[in-house]
Structures are given as structure tokens and as C-alpha cells.
Length: 351
Image (cartoon, rainbow, N blue to C red; front, side):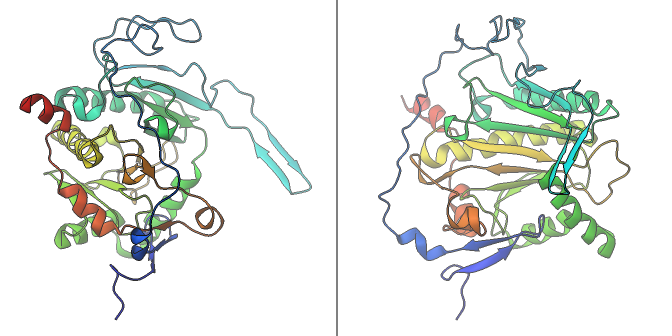
């Protein structure tokens, strides 16, 4: 008899229309492949050589203020430039390029060099949420901007170039590929049913309580049925809104709370500062109404079996479609089993 927990199968990603191959039995295979080195986790509260610490000089010569709250600035090495020339290039209908402009910003979550989100207080994270909102409003005020991507790369293994706790915001003059996919799927559902795709999906997940990891009055964090990364999380607002700017004060505090809780579960899973790439998906801006869009946030962590064995996206994943071993249901169960007290805090308490 076919069993999702035992046999290979494909799962449909409702948000992109793409498929992922799930192979639960492969978790039994021995691992003799790459084992990562654990990065040092003993940073000082202030590092005089860090480009992001308060009062320090950055690589371009700018000097950070002695900030005490979340701090933002235009990226000194932006991937998108605000004043690039407009233009298109096309040759024989085969070689096509279009100019792309925008604004890239860096957000330092804390003046302390040694803290990440799970080790910050809820109020400190709420200040980050407030800054996200203000930056979104400012960037959306530029009429040429069509999409605003708020994200964080955490950890060396995810290509983070500076260990100081920070995230980024890229505002672009076009809507990126992943957002186009999600726009199509959400609009299709909204046109057919007159309601949000993610509202319907979240209602089902909350009823089943199989893949839900965390929940409060305003948000739920779950391992999506179609997850690609081993401990992937989809964080969804219970209220159907298009933008982070629509959250009330209570919702902002609830978002800060669940972000601290989720990242604490991650760290506690392997007793390591858990790496990931995370980011919000919300409706395009300056492009008409998007009632089908429902705010959500993706967390894509690479670790698979331990703090030193990660999931590789190679071979079949690059040439065919994504594949995973551990089932989303098993991943959710492991995350739920972790304490909401950070392992470092437990160590201090027991010392």
C-alpha cells in the first residue's frame, strides 16, 4: 500500500506550480561525503575590524554612527544601482537583455556583534520589524520600483560575508522570477474561489496539526507539504494582507515573537547557530492592486543530518527537479520537539 512516509513520491508546490521528489527511505543511507567545519561561535560584543559595528569605518570609507537600535544604509556594493541608464539589447531574437535598476540596503539588526535573532529580546526584534515597515514605505515611494525583497542570509555556509547580525532589502524595477510564479498561482486560485490560496492552505494545516511547528494569535510557522530544504519553514500571517506595512502593532509584536521562537528551535536542533536564507514574499508595488497576494516568509536552511552535514542541490536537483529525503512531517516533528529556551541560555542557567 502506498505510504507517504515510506515510498518515493512527488509533491506539488501550490505557490509555484512546481514539483519536488520525496524519497524517505534514503535517510537510511550511510554518509561518507562532505562534512562541514563548524564556524567559530565566540564573537565579541564589539569587533573593531567589523564593517557593520557602531562607529566603525566601512569598506568604502563611510563611518557608521554609534547606533543603539537597528541601523540601515545603502549597500556600499549594491547589486542594483539607482541611477543606471535605461535600455534594451536584442540580437536575432536570441540574445536578449534589459536594463535593471534599483536600490539595495543593509539592515543591522543590533549594535552587538555577537547576537543573532534567537538571542535578541522580543522587543529588539520588534524594532527590526518596525524598521522593515519604514524602509518598505520609503522604497515603495519611488515610482519606478516594482518589487521589494526583504531577506537575511545567516551563516558562512549560506555565503554571509559578515557575521554581524544583519539582513538586506533589494528594491527592483522588475518583479523577480520566484515572485512571478507565486503571483500566477495565487491569482489563479483567487479568481476561481474569491479568497486567498494561503488562507485556505493554512486553515487545512492548522486543522491537521501535522506540519505546524509554531502558532500564535496572528501567525503560524509550518514545514510546507512541498518543502524542498530539510527543515524549510513557511511563516504565514493568519490575516490576509498583501504587505508588511498592513500589520497592526499587535501583529508586529506577534511576528517578532514567532521569529525569536522559530530561530531558537533551529539553533537548538543541532546546538549550533543555525544557518539559513530567509525572506518575505509580498505583493509587487506601484503596479495596481494585488488582492490575491498573501504575505508570507520562507526559511531555507541547508543542514540535513547534523550541524556539519548539509543538503546539496546538485545533479538531479539541478538538471531535473528538487529532491528531499527527510519528509516534511518528520522535520516538523523534530522541530516541535525542541525547547523554546535557547541552548546557550540553558547552559548558562545550569552552570
